[in-house]
Structures are given as C-alpha cells and as structure tokens.
Image (cartoon, rainbow, N blue to C red):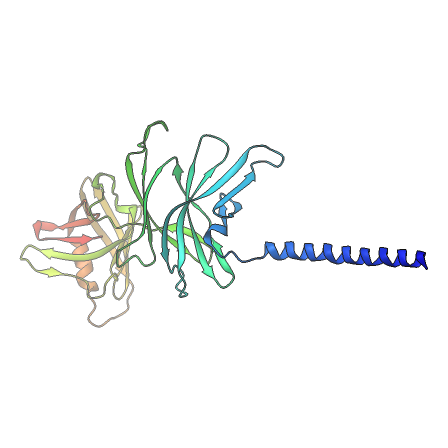
Length: 307
C-alpha cells in the first residue's frame, strides 16, 4: 500500500510538472506575440536587421558570442499624425544606434497604430553624429502626410570633431504598404542653382507664356502640357489632345525645335496648336533660381515658362 502511494505521488508530481512546463512554454510564446502597446516597444528594421525596443531601448550582440553590443535607443522628436488615414494617430520619431565604434547613427522611423498593436517601419538613415533639430508635419497644402526632418550636419570635408553647423532638411512620406519612407522631391522655389540645372534633368510642365504686348496665355488644363528632353537630341511632349515628338538642337544658350510630329486625334478647344507654334518659335533658353526653364521666343516676342 505504501509502495502504491509513493508511485501515485510520483505520477501526480510528474503530471503537475508536465502541465507547468507546457504552461510556461505557452506563456512564453504568447508573450512573443503580445501586440506592442507603445511605439517604444515595437519592432523596427534598421539596416536589414529587426530591432525590438523595450521601453525605448534594445541591446543585442553585434556578433553571436561577442561582448560588443548594438544599442538602439528612442531619441524623440515625435510627430503624431494619421499616416495611413485609418482614423488612428500614428507616430514618427528618431532612433539612435551605436554599433560598438565611435559613431552614433540617427534614423527616422514610424509606428502605425493598428488593431494588432504598433507596427514599426524600416528606418531611414539621416547620418552619423548629426544634430537633430525639429521633426514636423509639412504645412505645404500639396504635401499630404509629408514629414519634414530638420537637422544640422557637417560641411563636406569637415571632421567629426567639428560641431555640426550646416542646416539640412529632408521631406519624407511613408508608404504604409511596404513600411518604408520615400523622399519627397521639393519644388525649386527659391532654392535652385541655375548653373547646375539641365534640360534633361526632369519633365518640364508648361506654366504660362507672356508676350511682349502683355498678353498672357496659360494652359486651360493644368499639367496637361509637358516637355521632356532626351540626351540623343530628341524630345517628347504631351498636350491636352495629342502626343508630340521631334528633334531639338542646342548651341550655347540657343535652342531650336524641328521635325515635330504629333498623333492625329482631333480635340475641341485644344491648345495644342498654340503650344506647338510656341515651340517652333523658340530661339534661346535659360534657367532661373526658382527652378524654371524659360524658352525665349524669336524677335523678343515673348517667353514661355516651364517648371
């Protein structure tokens, strides 16, 4: 009887240990799947490596078995805004990362507030040992959900011993589908260098034409008229009706368009004829500090503005 009781006690103990162990394993797995309730506890991808913050900090081995650590920290400069337009407030902020050397690398990240918890983005590198200033939502009405990060960096050739003094700004927009930031190209208003601008640098959009009799013509259909220069001496254009193509010749600041052809669609009230006539009468060009391409018409009869 005594022997039977001992066997029974061992069996009960083994059963309890088995359930305790399985409960522990289950809780551990559940813990791994617990939604991040704060952006300071979410996971982010930094240089291809997934970093999971806990209370805003992550420390992992640089190499398995190494004493060297990769330390990632919440820095701040938060902007709260609904980035994916789901009615919930998301967060954009800066992280720093130290990889065991002397560098401190700054990244922009975003965390979307989802029903499954906060989901972190890939980090976009700003630079090493920069001086962050402000992070803000762009006030430009054409910049929907665009984040502006302002910071100071060093001028080319300056060592890291030099205090960052060159002001920089970057305009970023998150793609919620792939959780990556893309840089938003700025217009050139007040910030272009005409000496560095080229005809082939972009697709130009016709803004207006001013004639020397003070008559101004502008496109009735905004952004319909574009002009693209190719390196091989050919160009293509779009209008409010047909596509146009042909050749152009440049000598110094002189330019001419020739051998122009277009598709044959007929459109009521189209400005295509006037647009192609302008091109045929162009004799020179120049750029402005506003990022504009100016095509000057023959006999100083007027100028065509593209941007």
